[in-house]
Structure formats: C-alpha cells, structure tokens
Length: 333
Image (cartoon, rainbow, N blue to C red):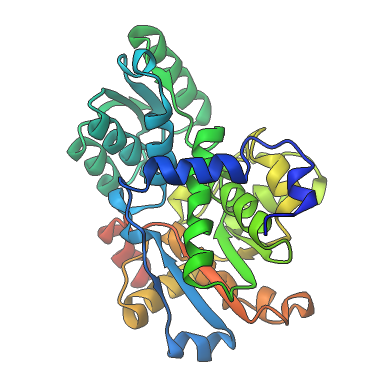
C-alpha cells in the first residue's frame, strides 16, 4: 500500500507515480541488478545485509537508470539536437550510452581531474568530450557554452525530476527482491540517488529508514541537515570521486524531509569496505559505491542506539567504475 501521507502531501520533483512510469519506460533497457548477501559480512556487521549491485548496471553504475529515463522521456523534436551534461564520470558515461541507444548525440563536459576509466567509458559509448577545469563554476560555464553552440537539451546529473525518478526504480526492485528490508543505506552527493530511493521506498513502506552515507572529507549533506539549509564547501577531499557534488534545490527538500540520518565515514573506512567487497562478495566496487558498507560497519552506526533495530539493511553498491591504479595506491598506503 502506498499511503505515506508525509511523502504524498508534499510536492517534490518526483513521486511514486513518476518512478513507476520510469520503470515502465526503461525496464527493457536496463539490467535488473541482483541482490547479494554474505554470512561473513552479516557476522561482521551484526545485521543481515542485502547488497543491491548497481555496479552490474549498464555503464557500471546506477546512473544509467536516470539517464535512460531522461533521454527516453524527450519528445522527438527535442531529442534530435542531442543532450549535454557536465559530470566527473558515471553520469557522463550513462548519458552517452543512453543517447547512443536513442541514436542522438551526447555532449559531455568533464573536469580535468576525472578518473581515466570513467572518461574512457564516455568515449567508448560515443560521447563527445569537452574539458573543463575542476570547479563547478567552470563545468557549468562550459556546459552553457556547449548548449548555446549545439541547441542540445541539458540533462543535469542529479537536479532533475526525470533523473530522480529513474534512480527511484532501484527501490522498486530492491523491495520486491528483499521485502523484509527495514533500512536502506545510500551514498549521498548531489542527492539524485537518495531522493529517488527515499521517495519510492517510503511510499511503499512508510516505516522504512533511509540513511545516507557520506565521506568525512565531503560532508556538505550532513552539514546541510544540521543547518536546515543547503551548505556547500570551498573544497572536498575524499577518495570517493563520485561524492564531491553538493545538493540541489530539487534534491534538498527530499533529503531534508525523508532522509533519517547521515553517517560519516573516513577514506580509510571506505577503502577497507572496498577490500571487503573484493575479498568476500567478489565484487569490484568504486570508492563512492563502498560508502554504504563502510557506514554500516562504522562505530557511528553500530554504537548508535537509534539504529539498534535496523536488522535487515539494504546497501546500494552504486557503481564499479574504479580506477585500479588509484585503488592499488590507496591499498598500499
């Protein structure tokens, strides 16, 4: 029953209807990713963990869901001139692939510090790369120039209702695959993923807990929750390259209202979680994708009495596009 008054009574950029529409639109194009479990990790965490493996999604990350929904939502006359975005990696590759499937151009603005493996994915899927400096201002200015030159449609990485709706299809699948889940832990950055997950999950099960996992070196979402307004940082310092964005005006209201708490983890905890994914789950997970496991194993979660009843925990392994050179360096520090 989808009767969460708190969700339905407020107007957000997406809702359970738009998420179900997204599922219908993209189901033949995406992978229905598996849910894995491990008795070893259950024992280490003291909970039953359910890993939603979006690292096995097309393009190697959850981002393909939102990008696919956005691209295939476009009317034909809109789509012909193509799409443009700015992204450090996974959204860029996802949009390139979605555009390729629709047969339209994708113009991708990428900061110069983006991981090599993610840039290679963009090129592999036929995206046309435009380089920017690493600042958000530079990325947005370059995207605006490309928009003006091409007449393409901007598809924002997270601050877009179509993107949020696409990401929300993860909850629809996960709660079918493991309906006993009482808590979902989700990486947070710009908030597109957690907004979609929260809106869908809390519409299906109003009692479910939605927790965000965030690097300590990029803790703007935690600061935003504490301040009750969007907080941005002058710089971010984390191995999790996909978690360096800040909340948008469409994602913030959902995070403010529907995310129950934010758990901060160190880069060491993230790398340790990546190692566990490799060694125990036998799954390659990028740093941004490992923060959920890092969170559930952290003292901030395990010793917090508020979460003692979180017995069946869904963890979104959001992506597997890891730059192995950087990983080996991190593991050998």
